[in-house]
Image (cartoon, rainbow, N blue to C red; front, side, top):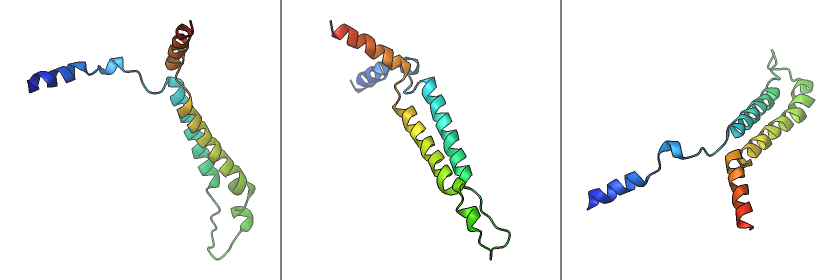
Length: 105
């Protein structure tokens, strides 16, 4: 009896080819673009090293690039990542549109 129920559970499991991916190709491309923009923002923050540790150069550390531009670019990268995650894949959008059209009749 136990073997039959185990075999039934295994046979009811859908194969890997039948399950659609969670995200579409465009979602992954948008995620990659957001990651690249995020890394560019982090690279914009890097720097300000001085040859002499006893000298302090506030114009290098508190520059527009490090204080304003880099955080904006990092936040933009994160917003793009959230958009890529929230964007519906094309195969799900078309399925829901046809479903809503048939249910409204």
